[in-house]
Length: 272
Image 1 (cartoon, helix red, strand yellow):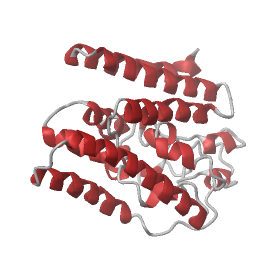
Image 2 (cartoon, helix red, strand yellow; image 1 turned 180 degrees about the horizontal axis):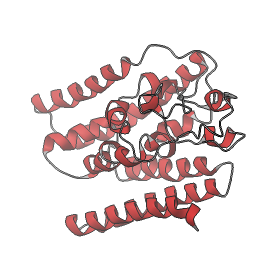
Image 3 (cartoon, rainbow, N blue to C red; image 1 turned 180 degrees about the vertical axis):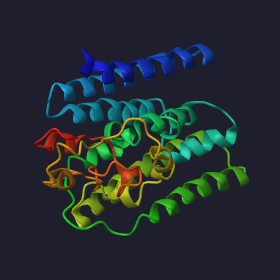
Image 4 (tube, rainbow, N blue to C red; image 1 turned 135 degrees about the horizontal axis):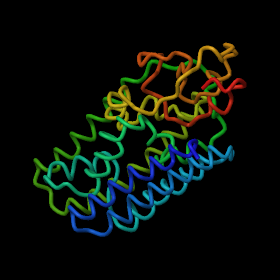
């Protein structure tokens, strides 16, 4: 039973968050929301341990579609970064601010960029494209993410400064239009660079929050040097081009790891 400790721990973490938010916010929705996400992620980790090939894809669909269709389209919550700025500016700890605090600010201290690998509804679609392993060297375009991050902040800030009314409706339309743009740009970049995760590496503004916290992540892929035969398979299959054979936190692209476990699956010596 020891090998199932990780999915049980993940479930315990999300259930704790669910209960605390339910009791402090006096809103039953938080109990349902974080319990559902915790169960979905724990199920995926359990299936991975059982060596089920599509374990991560199942989690992506369960969580990604829930957040995109139910929270976004049905409940009208903007879970993109502009929604985070909106609630932050209003001084309300609800919806997107709670989501960002759990998944993208403090959560990465535990599971790093796990959000990108298991819950992002943009990557959920991009991972179905044909370039699962990058076909060309990584481009030096990571600076673009800081521009999109700043643009989202300025966009919402200007709405508040201008005193625009009906901001919630604007945020809903920003969510719709933003997702269309994300998918269009993400798919275009995937085919242009022959890399499904090009959008994540160069454009996505969320990584500005995720990367620094992921440096301290508790859950990390590490390499047993005594077992490693330096075959290079792990590096070839990594969608984020992380040097997982380097145990240092300063390893190449270290804060880019999305815990997809493709390297672990590919290792012929179980060194990862």
